Image 1 (cartoon, rainbow, N blue to C red):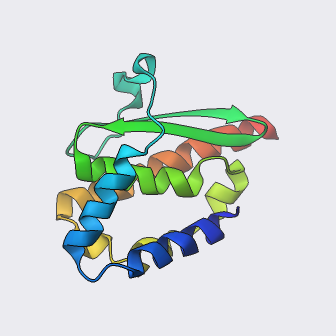
Image 2: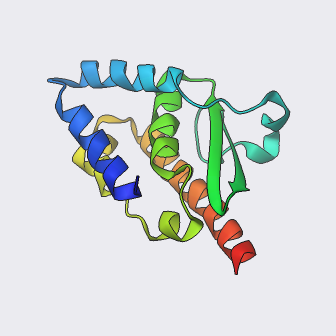
Length: 140
């Protein structure tokens, strides 16, 4: 499935909820289904800078696609990174780099986050794209 198709799917899922409390609950559920990072990768180098809570992300290249795992010590943040990983994991580095993240505005996520969480969201996207840059360089 392409990044755009996954994003469209997420926008559709979020449109099913009437209010933001339901959407937060859904994000918490998504966080519970997150492909968890192995303990050996829960190290300082894998913590995303700019997040108020701790978020660890690990990436590896598998069959020319980037595979992400992650974890967070905060349930909402865990839901946010789960959404991003669903979009970007198992994708080619070039597709990750070319992808826009308009779906975040479409589901209203950024406007319903506190400023510190919104900054954390931007930091998470930036970090995932940095991994894609590193792996894209390796593939050339």
